[in-house]
Amino acid sequence: MVRRIIHTTGDFDFARTTHLSPRAVEAGIAALQRGEGIYCDTQMVRSGVSKPRLAPFGCDLHVHVADPDVAEQAAEQGTTRSVVALRKGAATGCGIYLIGNAPTALFELLRLADAGEIRPSLVVGVPVGFVGAAESKEALFASSLPYIVCRGRKGGSAIAAAVLNALMILAEELP
Image (cartoon, rainbow, N blue to C red):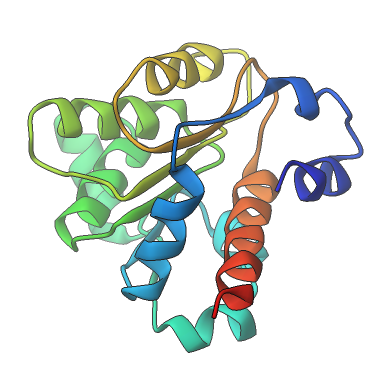
């Protein structure tokens, strides 16, 4: 998995910054095999997921950040579209969460999990940037949720998709 991240980014720092909670890979594979829904925080994440590889698992990809109702609710609530989109994805019962762009989505996921409103099977927390990215990933790292995280400011949609693609390859190799 880390090799795929490095290949995707061309950045060997990910060998040092990528961390997996105990049994995260097993949890992700089990969620795929159960056909759980997969939440993507951006269309870019969704675009990077191998659809032919995903098809046998029967998992649906959910992306809501560009939904008109999400933009409307975000404006009404004075929050980001990423937060409202995450809530909408959580309401569909997604089990795997791919957060490659929006620290606010990762913070909201952690809030919902702490409140007992959701119980993700796996969280891939790799948002990129200078505002809240490192902090949101540290909060995930400190949580009890099953996670795959790249600590620090580096991350991105391509990494989130690469992690899911690697999980699918691993799942295909199982008897």
